[in-house]
Amino acid sequence: MSAEADRVGVIGAGQMGSGIAQVVAQAGLEVWLHDTPEALKRSKASMEDSLGRLSARGRLQEAPGAVLERVHPAAELEDLAGVRTLLEAVTEDWGVKSGIFARLRELLSEDALVATNTSSIPITQLASSYGRPGRFLGLHFMNPVPVMPLVEVIRGLGTAEEAVAQALDLVGRLGKTAVQCNDYPGFVSNRILMPMLNEAIQCVMEGVAEPEAIDQIMRLGMNHPMGPLALADFIGLDTCLAILEVLHSGLGDPKYRPSPLLRKMVAAGWLGRKSGRGFYRY
Ligand code: NAD
Image (cartoon, rainbow, N blue to C red; front, side):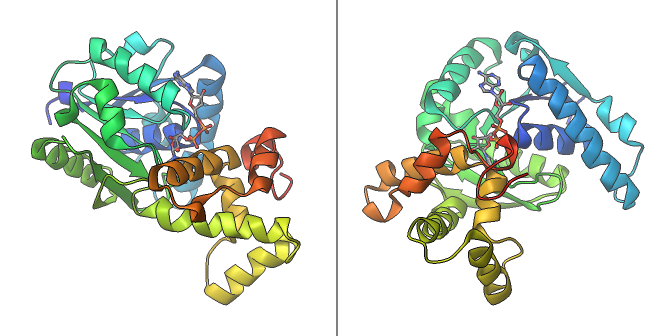
């Protein structure tokens, strides 16, 4: 890649966008990160924390400060105008994402590579909101991004082979493993994961067992590193609900119907770790 092509834009500095910006900077690329000032402040603190832990374990090639210097806070979307690779990681909401892609069409050059980190919204539909489907695809990073090796690479109906090749190259450069799939609701990861998390929530609602017991059964009995309710809290209950809604409407099968308890907790603002309360207190 040339120096110009090394400029990457990341939109959304929540838990995923922060992690993505961090691994891009760790790979030696310059990254412009756009969100609100408060989110950018939280994101810097979380990157410092994560880089400090990686450094203490001897898993960083350079000082944490040197990595952070490659992350440039961008107060305005317009600050991302020159980037050749754009990774979007804002809230899982069609209206928010499609609004951003419509604006990006005006800001980015025709050959820019644009990827969304959506967990479930159809890539083909988001590609249409951007308007250049050949240059658009899904790059679904896993949480926490600096630790998890997988990136699910999702082709929209119009994604060009060249864009896929460029994306695979980028994922390799970030030290991650790319696995490809096609564009159906929830792709592979969330189509399989979310029904399990939803069923665990139904178990709480029906009083089958306490959250701790459900998580312990899945950890000790199925060898899962985290129980499903701790994982739902970690992902964010609002994000889980949004993904289940997409699976339910996109596939039309009642087996994906979100648990009423999940809806109730999201309505109460109990979103898991990020709000301090979910199935557990933080
Ligand atoms: P989050 O709530 O932690 O962060 C979302 C961020 O988007 C917030 O900082 C918010 O301020 C920002 N945002 C919202 N509207 C914006 C706009 N118009 N412009 C700029 N920034 C805006 O959410 P997250 O968990 O980081 O999820 C982000 C995306 O990643 C979602 O699409 C989600 O489905 C996906 N994802 C999440 C996980 C997970 O485990 N949480 C895993 C894989 C993919």
